[in-house]
Amino acid sequence: MDVVVIETRQLGDRSYLVHDGTSALVIDPQRDTDRVEEAARDAGVTITHVAETHIHNDYLTGGLELARAHGASYLVNAADPVTFERKPITDGQVVQVGALTVRAVATPGHTHTHLSFIVDDGEQQAVFSGGSLLYGSVGRTDLVAAEDTPGLAHDQYASVRRLAAEAAPGAALFPTHGFGSFCSSGPASRAGGSTIGEQLTSNHALTDPDEDHFVQELISNLTAYPSYYAHMGVTNAAGPGPADLAVPESLDAAELMRRLEGGEWVVDLRRRVAFASNHLLGSVSFEYGTSFSTYLGWILPWGEQLTLVGSRGDVEKAIRDLSRIGIERPDAALGTDPHALAPRAALASYPRVGWDAVLAGRASGDTVVDVRRADEFAASRVAGALNIPLHELLRRLDSVPAGRLWVHCTSGYRAGTAASLLQRAGRDVVHIDAKFDDAERAGIPVDNTPVPAGPTA
Image (cartoon, rainbow, N blue to C red):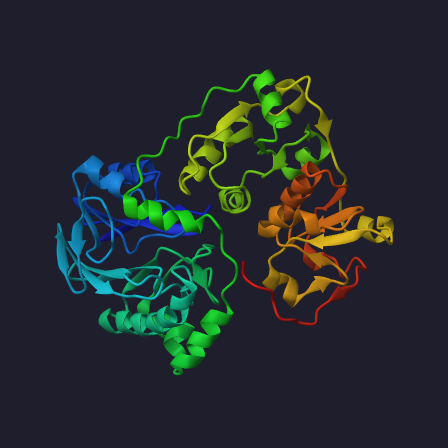
């Protein structure tokens, strides 16, 4: 048995190609299936089966299209209310994939109908746990409904223990979530790999003998998650179509200017340093990188037309990333010189500083705006700072105080986006592009007294 990992760092997830040298099973494929197909070609194997551990909340699946393209059996829980043709599978059912034996194990918790798969080739065993047992923790249990969260947390406790009992201690563990995904919860480690035996001694879901304590701890660790999750499950149950990854023809200057003047969402993909120094007035900064699609999908209004501005390479990657969360066919203006893209459009800039400049330049009437999540702010904060989490900023613009705003986050990334949104709304902003951990050393008064976090909106 060979397991090929297809990693999607942008969402903190992994998909898997499992094969015996001839026949292959794909587990939890992302929507851009060309990566899986390339892995299958490289391994010289035929994809005969595709399986889903659950109806995903954090991305659109490529499972249906991949199965159709290869004439493969599409294994989806019989209890999942899907509207497409699939091969229904239930708890305990065994499927043969070449020399591999694949057994489904019901592991409710992350969702009500979650399945894990134990794959055996007669000599070694692998466990594909989806959003059930992760490295160091488990998948979050609050994505279905608030009223279901406590019950699902109890289910999660029982499920991971059943899974660990039914698998061999030496079985390699391959979760889908837990690599930065907001679908994980609690003290998930950033380990690259693990086994069931290792988790039995290190995972709090398996070492905590008190189920009620585990449930309380799990729920208390739940933090805010991206708003676009609300659209993923519905689309996955209906069966997403193929991703369109084509880069569109670049908009001309007149059309780009019309969109800016009309208040449409024009997204600049350049580094936040370049954006702060020179950008099209009315555009917003979402520096392209591993956090790009998560924050854009979380912050901007769902379903509105987007125009991406940046190099062809960044636009191409951004289109792929956005397709994974159901943001389809954005337009583009290709280029990195704002003046060249729209010579008649107004340009803008704002100061970008470190903590030393805050100490020297902040006036008494100015406000420090912390755009980290509420749980981050609750743990430690700049004394007197106002907390407006980035994902709440657009709907809370009316509550932002007048005067100059000094905007910070943990590293500078979220603050760059927040500063651009505030400037777009006509505010006077300074982007603090510095690590929060350096604030106190720079002489900034920091309050480290823990306080209760606000709601995880």
